[in-house]
Length: 197
Image (tube, rainbow, N blue to C red; front, side, top):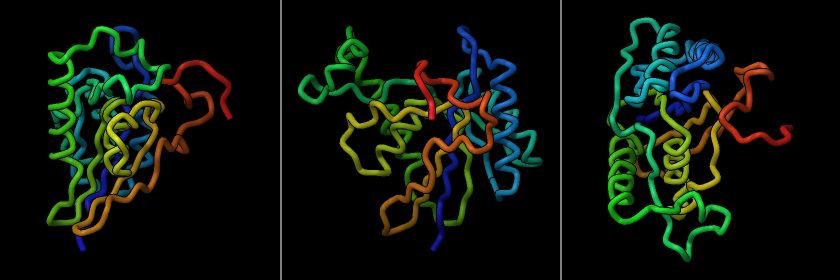
């Protein structure tokens, strides 16, 4: 039975302008080293510079593997919960969202799932360099959780999430937010400040 292996990663640490920092380059390089032993066929990335730069650094460790943009991986809010489903702590995050802003995000989220969250006819290993919300959305989808459950599923910069898809079976979550390839000083970027284990 063919398996589609998706290796999801949030881009490396970026500055306030969305450009990859030296820390982000080092994180991406370490992730590339980790992935180098796998039979990766493609590295897909968001159109945004921080994700594209991260993907190209990862690609330096995967000779001959194409590094290709995928519009569906762009950073966006995939789903805005209706008021009854919205945890009170998140209410301020969605202030000002109306139907005109919800619709494009939900359309992109559906396109993301349609393109990547399904089995393929042959065995594939694909790296997706994207953003925290898109990792959360694909994980939520794999778990068949309610749409609002993408909230609070945080990913560190270059943390690895692995999902597998096979015909006739529910998706398998192999890893979520694994930072084993990063030394302590490069972990936990991309999160709000708080005590860390």
